[in-house]
Image (tube, rainbow, N blue to C red; front, side):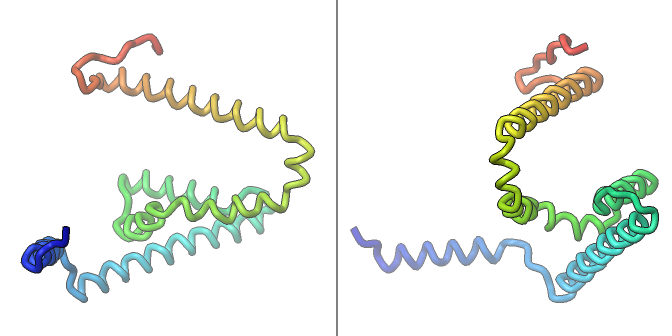
Length: 163
């Protein structure tokens, strides 16, 4: 059954009115947000390359991103918060975090002979490390929930078997 012209017109009007009630940004506020994003991205890049330079000078073989994240974490602890510039740069990146795994997944092709040589060792190391991570995370979360006196949605207190 075909919709009448009036029904389709009403649907279009509802869609347009719902879109118009959404928050719109002026050009100036858009430019301010873009500027904050670019400044935060620049700061994160400077932090990465400073960590890379420092690691090259000290001849330490760890990823520069790891040192950069540690320095950023310490800085945020000292400032007792996340600077708005960093937040505005990191938030869109974190929203699309799964895209950052694509190069690593594709790079597995370079090590296909190693994977074929030791499939059981790789499988068990992945399974064991995952189970250990899950156990430690569950134990820590139970301890924190008991310490903070958190209750379940039905009002019951969590069991204190983990203590």
